[in-house]
Length: 378
Ligand SMILES: *Cc1c(COP(=O)(O)O)cnc(C)c1O
Image (cartoon, rainbow, N blue to C red):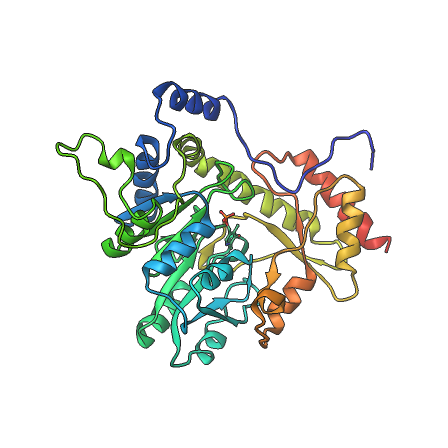
């Protein structure tokens, strides 16, 4: 590996002059605050993308998860079943509501929740289920919807990583009572930070929108009212609005989504080909009934490969590398011992490699050469 070559990061947002121009237009318009004209446009675009009737732009996915659970009435004494292999924000949102997350193990091939394991964990205190499109791989939404309906539970889709993904031809974000996307810089499209809540339930949409703006309608929604309606605050609300500066960036990114996804798919296929004969490394293959977004490209290393040392060896060669994501039942904050052996395995053996729409074939070749070196020189 030539040390004079530039580093290949794990991820990098793909932006150009169009995002810059969109920001300039917002600055010139004078409307920078949240849920203004650009935010409203972004909400309409996400509703169209997912086939949902309502969308609310919020300042990040974690805030969207919090408000969605609050709007579903989750509170102290409730239990919410959560897919174990995910970023901690998924279960933090349950704690924000004073409820208790209960974790269920995942499938080895998808990293998404194992619906049979989930069903075993339903108790009289269970209020609902949070399924996760882990690393951008859609979960088993048909079985999850059946299970939730059969037990009178709510179903929430953590679609943080899956904008543009599909399950049985239906778009991610279309599943369950409510779904939440992230626009964080590590995700497929980004405004730096941001999130969008989508739902077909007008009541949930109204409560999320109100709670995202202190418990009232946004200034943009209130402007032009004939009479001075001084809001009354009956409930505590938050300030979780997405700035219109960021909404404008997100709109440009959404326009580019198909191109980004197409390039990530080519890169994923190319990785699978190039890694096929690398010992100790298994490329991901998701089932044919779903189209992942490849938000994260994580290989699984065999038991004899030291994953952590491999991450460090790659970084020493200028190649961005990371774990996959977390086995939440292991995290002290939840104090929730659970039997999740597959999630444990993925937490120990997943290794993420550079993946972003701008990644060149040449850089990808360098990544694979470095992986080969790192695992064979151990
Ligand atoms: C990134 C991520 C989140 C948090 O998204 P933010 O927009 O950063 O709050 C939640 N859940 C999952 C699965 C994620 O990957």
